[in-house]
Length: 143
Image (cartoon, rainbow, N blue to C red):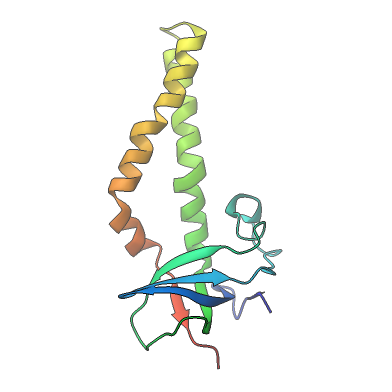
């Protein structure tokens, strides 16, 4: 039930509409999501949680509260999400640590490598609309 893959390009998760606000719909994914075929399952967090919520800008068809729906996720976007959420911050921290350790004491270099995440995540939050457009999630009513 929870997860299926109709072809090699998308994942389909079953869920229920939990909140509607204008064109924004929050969907609670079923607790029994199975992501065994996904290479990023250890990083994603969807498979580990009981009820993950996703926010979707939905155009097309009226949706009602507590209505069962299918959330469609493109596989190629998963790799991009892992890059932006995990890989790039790690590389940024590592580069900062290696660079600042040449000029500063060890504790200061460690602190600088942690503090570099503050402007990184600030910029990520400022570009929220870009990420919403890039990481588009589709919503369908099941047949």
